[in-house]
Length: 293
Image (cartoon, rainbow, N blue to C red; front, side, top):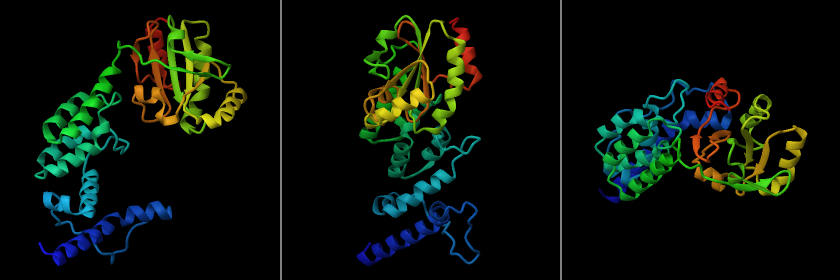
């Protein structure tokens, strides 16, 4: 393929990418969710071959088109959430001819191999069989091992963080009690919504063999704001501040990708569940009662 032909093909893919993305971009930047293109607006070329290895390696624009088209044609959950849909994508990935496209899609979906995804074991082994990229295989295996480490009964990763009342508190300090951990932040709306429910649960189990520990990932520079929030909202339990926001050790140890996240540890320091029900979920009380706390 000569220079002019390559340039023409590159321009064609750039044009097609804009046609494919225009409605989404317009909705995002103009904040018009109901926006639709006119009848005279050029149509995306649906006859384009989206399974060509050479074009995928040649054009970043083609890559974007292929990936976006793939996502739009995979079954999501009932709420339309793309997260944790890797198991639905496996047959389509297998059917592709291009190994480069297979590898890219698997890399994009590698984070679906986590403790929150009940299908992570199946997805991991399927992906290992499909990809031929040794670096990607190592990444998948690292995610798989991290998920396995958080299975019930395993030793819970520890922590040792600044206590709002002074000093530091570690998970080791709390041995002998169940520990319900709330990973949160003052800037997190869903986290704040759980606070009244958490306070009710704390009151219900007051004097029982359980400690309620809230660990904030607010920035260290916002420590005064965090402390004031605790006082103003009359938060109970043990209030701790993690060391490095999203990069805090506890976030990595428990493979946390979003807050709030709740964890339950038993009196021996072992994991009961690395993804416990939230305080507003009746299943939390069912779980705590089943443990005879």
